Image 1: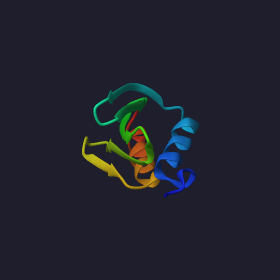
Image 2: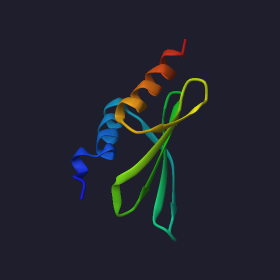
Image 3: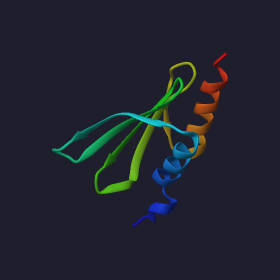
Image 4: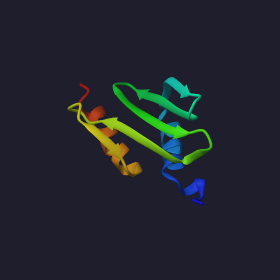
Length: 90
């Protein structure tokens, strides 16, 4: 079993707490115990999809400054998309 403290889920949540992201919406499908959380900060949005009992296997999806979908495989993917988006604000 993966150590949750080293998982992508834990790294992302530590980072979004430090930046100040807010949870905009949360939907849970009771049939398969999957929760989809929508987080945002300023103009940047991303989604987290996780099973209730397996947060270490969460998947993340965000969009770059041009609206292209980015599957987040590491914290760096999310950070790059975030800072590109924020740098577009003027």
